[in-house]
Image (cartoon, rainbow, N blue to C red):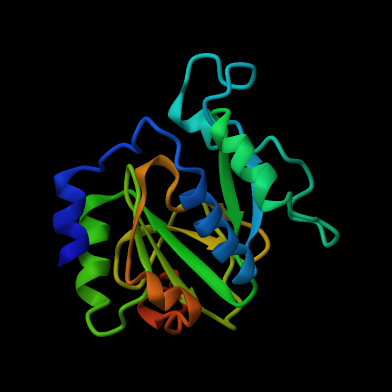
Length: 194
């Protein structure tokens, strides 16, 4: 599938010239879809002096899962990225993002999505797939699905993802973000009772 092939090509870095309009376009779209921005440490020297990839994904913003959380404006989020920070997008209501950095899992999910065409995003280390859901799915740092592959669930109002154009991420089926397909049963956590 195209995703797996493109993942194997490697991710091209964002051009050295910061494209503010590109960030504003994507960030405005995420807002319109109900996502909320969360300032992350990124590569800001005062928060991440060693430039560690995992530290860069940690939030600076506190209380972002609270009921009254108000996202910073698009302009302030873009300013944050331009200075070296990152932005995580709190998953929108009625959505779930499935995240995996396991190459076998990515290939298996891509094959199983045949015909579903969810919006999916190639990231620096893996993939995100976005689905609509009304299911009561619980989040986990790593769960094994009924498909038999490890994933992380990013839940509406609780989990965040770093999305295009940050870190060189790229969308496939981006138009499906407006109306993603339903969360498939085969991506539910595998438990002895199911």
